Length: 95
Image (cartoon, rainbow, N blue to C red):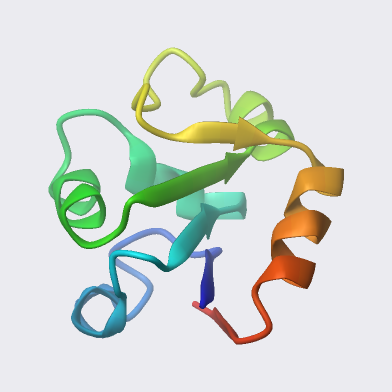
């Protein structure tokens, strides 16, 4: 399953996300969801413990000036790669 997080961790239902994600699910951070991937945060610790595949939309990271603060465990992707992941994962949830 593909989970797309577009809201900051305090605006989304982060608890439910953490409860339903499997290790093989992919999580893409976009828009304000990028804040979930900042180093030394509660949200990043939880995301790393629940999913093996963490991505962030590169343009959103750079637009917010957060590239230096984003965890190195998160793979930066382009819009084209986002579409490829969407095609690969038939089931998707938007947070």
